[in-house]
Image 1 (tube, rainbow, N blue to C red):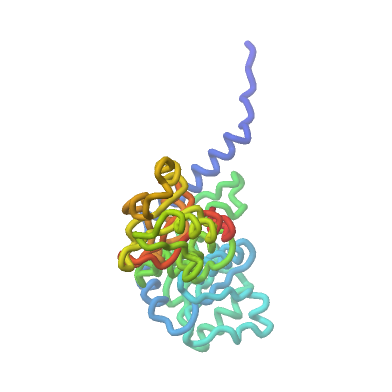
Image 2 (cartoon, one colour):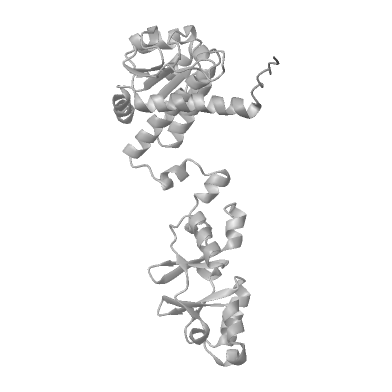
Length: 322
């Protein structure tokens, strides 16, 4: 009788196994949220100082990411490396701060100096660990105890599921805090002025043209004069106003549609009435979406019915929004 050797798992099989193992860990964490979670959120929200986070090795890398997420969502935070803490950086931790220490085992030797410092100066201490009976957990003011779940490595030693759970707990803290303080997309933009994200969080007011750069004519302006305004300002349109109110816009399309009698008409007779507009506080990304959906390249910017600026898709391109 011939026996066929079992097929070795493929890379895709291993990937699915890892993801399923870590997903099961997250499900267990959601079903068994640490009892102190709400108290820790309240503690951080009421702190006068910063959230000091520390951890060694993989826990340190996760801690640094938690700090970045907290800081970018309005919670002042700082990572202190446990090795550097033992050589002077303990001075960064004050009584006004909240200290969060990460250690899966709760017995990381490198954290002992930070732990002792927090106990000595009565700095509120939060333990993020999966070992409720550990030295760190017993010493902490509050405990964010993670469920003990199998590591996804297959040998039970490589920090995989445990670091995923710690990272997710940090995200949960950050989001609970930002929602509690009513943190908005506009607030987020304040901390992200650079790069693609910063560009998309810019507002129309930051990019629009104003004053003499705006092409505007009165409703009764003869079309020859309106054409000069369109040409001189270079946007391919002109706004048509009546008593300070935006009545419509004259576009290249309007010119073609009225070509037969164009030069004998006034701007209001040629204009497209009630054009699409945006407000100055509209996000630039939202203005781009409006342009794309309407298949146009220019938007008048209004406050109420009054034109206050003009935005061209080239402005969005230069800013990195498009």
